[in-house]
Length: 153
Image (cartoon, rainbow, N blue to C red; front, side, top):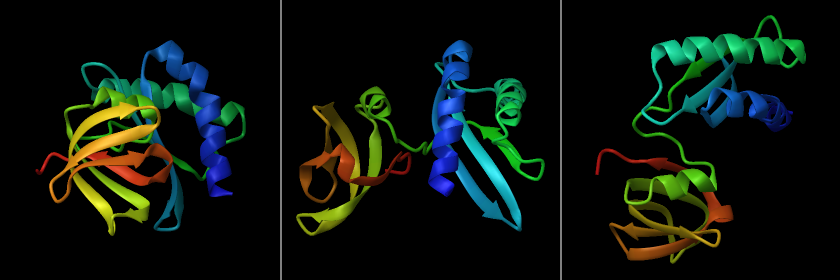
């Protein structure tokens, strides 16, 4: 149910995203303090301003309400992904080659599920990271449970 809602939101916003020249980084649908929150993280070249978030909030809200995806009781939050932004899409991995990242995998690779180091390459569906513990490690994109930029290395 929750994943269906997230996928529906992402597909509804695809055309708006292209028109607004922004990147949809992540969509979360979470319950906090009894309220359902649709949390959308956006980015663009040069970074996102408060004004961008405000404008996109109005645009997204209209689209989601038109399609009955957002209930009156839902809270819509738009923000930048921050310094330790999540990496979910192949394009994001390609964009941040050379950055320090943290990766968690579904299954252990050489007895390790958590990796930290410089993103060396993204090619043919594989991420290469220069892990601080084991050096160069190749990870299949589909095996990544969670990944983000890491600024505290």
